[in-house]
Image (cartoon, helix red, strand yellow):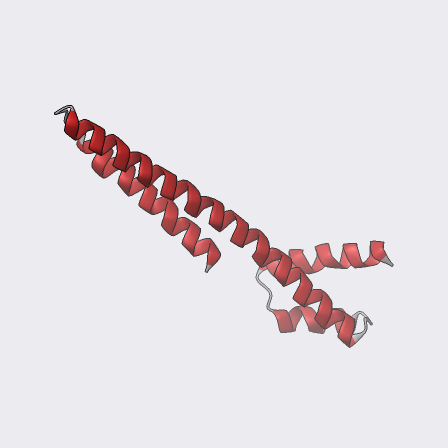
Length: 109
C-alpha cells in the first residue's frame, strides 16, 4: 500500500506543478476509484509538504540576505574609519541583500 501512496503522491505533486487546483485533482482521483477521505487527506499532505519545502527555501534566502546586509554594514563602517570611498559596498551589497531577503519573503508568503 505504501508504494501506491508514494506513486499517488508524486502524481498529485505533478498535477499541482502543472497548475491544477485542489478540486480538480480530487475529482480526478475520485474518478479513478479512490476513497474520498483518502483523497482529501493525500492532497492536503502533499500540499503541506510542498509548502514546507518552499518555506525552508524562503527562510534560507532571508538568512542569506540578512548576512549580506550585515556584511555590507560592516564594510561601510570600516571604510568610513579609513576614509575610503566604497559607495558600491553601501549601495550595491545592501541592494543585493534586500533583493535576496524579498525573494525569500515571496517564497515564505
